Image (cartoon, rainbow, N blue to C red):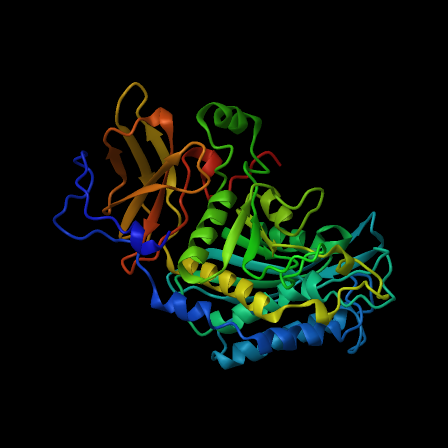
Length: 454
Ligand SMILES: [Zn+2]
C-alpha cells in the first residue's frame, strides 16, 4: 500500500478534545528527499569498503591489533579513518568514539579488549533521541577460536559495516531532528560483546535509543539451494520485550501486546517505508528475535530495554559463512551482490532519515472503552509533533490496517470501533509530514526504556 492511499480526508471526531476540521492537521506525506535517498547508495563505495576490510586477512576478535596490514586493530583504525574523512566532508559534523571493555569468556580464553568504532551525527532538534545502526567488524573461520587463518568475512559482516558507513556518508550531509549513531562493532562471533559494549555505553550515558538497526549478513542474494532473489530482505523482531517483568507479562497476557513490542512496530515501520520508496524491493517481517538458534548484536540492546531489529538477506548460503577458505567454501568478495547490498543500504538510510526527522514516538499510550461501542485512545504529547495519527488493525493482522489523522491533541474517540475486536496504536506526525513508528498501548508497546527485569 502506498502512503498516498493512506492519506485520509479530514475526519470529524466525536470527542470535544479532538481537532475539528477548522485547520488541516499534520498528515503523513510522501517525501521527495526519501525517494532521492533511496537511489543514492553507491555500489562503488560499498565495494571499496568490503574490499578494504577483506584485505586485512582476518578480523578475528583475538587477532593482532598492532599490525597496520592484518587483524582487527588494522580494521578498526581503517573504519575510524573512513569516519574521519566523512566528517571532514561535512565540516566536522561527526563525533567519533571508540568505547571498549575487556572481556573473557567461553570463546575468549584470555582477557581481550573489545572496541567499537562509532560515529555520531548530532540532531538539531531533539539531540538526546538516538537512532542507531550497527554491523560487526570481526570475522571468523571454521574454528571460532582460530585467529590466525584468513577469515575474509565479506558478507559476515563486512556487508553490514559497508552499509552503515555508506549510510553515514549519505546522511552526514543532512540535518535531522534526532541524533544518528553509526557503529562498527567487534566481538560478535565470540559472544555478542561489541553489542554489549555499545548498549552499556548507551545506558551509562542516558541515551534514549529509539531504534537500533543491526545489519548482519546483508550482501548476498543467492540462497544455498540456488534460488536467486534480489527483491527481499528479512527484518527480525521480538514479539515481547526481552526485559519485561513478571507483572508486565501478566498484564500483557490479558490485555494483548504479544506481537506489538516496539521492535515489532519498528519492523512494521520499515516494511511500510520499503513499500513506499523502494520499487521492486520488500521487507519480509519475521516474528522472531533472530534466525532459529542464532543471535546477533541486537540482543544486548533488547536486553538493555531498547527497541532493536536484525536485518539479514532473504536467502542465506551457509557454505559462505564461518568457513575456512577451501574449494566451494568461504565468505569471499565474489559472493557479494552489490546491487542488492545497495538496496538494503537504501532501506536503512530511509529508515534512519525518516525516524530522525519524525517526532519521538508518543509516550503514555493507553486505551479505554470496555462495555462501550466506542474506543478512546490516549497519549502524552511529544515535542515536535504537529499532530497524531491513531491506528487500528484486526488482532490477527500483521500490519496496521486503519488510520485516522487527528490534530495536536492527546486523545481521540473512535466511534463504533469496539475495543475488544482490534489492536490500537498511535504515531506522532511533524508539521512537514514525517511520522514516528506506531506505539502500542502500555509497557508492552512503549518505546521508552524501562529498566525491566534485569
Ligand atoms: Zn555476523
